[in-house]
Length: 277
Image (cartoon, rainbow, N blue to C red; front, side, top):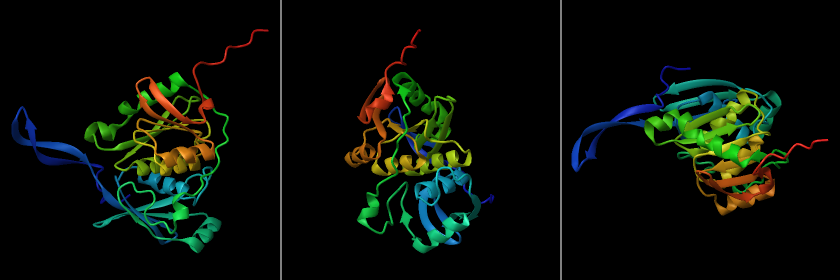
């Protein structure tokens, strides 16, 4: 990785008003820089993002864009920094690369934009993969997993200005978390972390520190996770999309309270009692 890649957090001077007085101060704030995704030498997209976990970002973006499948494993990535931003140069498998070259496009997006540069209205509401997992989770376990996010968000503790996306599985009780100024970017980085660590999304939950938009449902479906849960409300299109693809959408998680908008059968209040012969 080039030494020119910006630090994800910088210290900025400011005038802070405290106790009715202004005084010189400073605050840690997240960096935001152009990140270009190239595949086989062709630029696919330019996103404004936090320059952290860039290998995960490249792999996750390829997954959620449909360029690779969830079980594809790591892709080769070269990180090249310049005065203009950071380029993530990736190489896809030969067959995938040839298919991509036939339909390549370019797009430029602002912070966390998941739709800028699409070629048609149909692409904006493209149908995600179906989620058919029989996975179930205890309500208490879901609450406990969400409660772990603040302590795991190191960038947000420092800046109070970034989103988090996490994956939790009851099988390991492990929490994989990525952060970014854009919620879509954070989820892409999480997707890439799962791809690079060869973690299946089928038996776990995606947790978001944001509202749930349709793009987040689409990306979660690409990951293969049967449940997405967030602290804020969903959009109407996100609910319709989750319902159609078979995903459980949980939102407005505050303390021990939450709302289940689609496929509630995956959320259970208590474990089934063992049958004694």
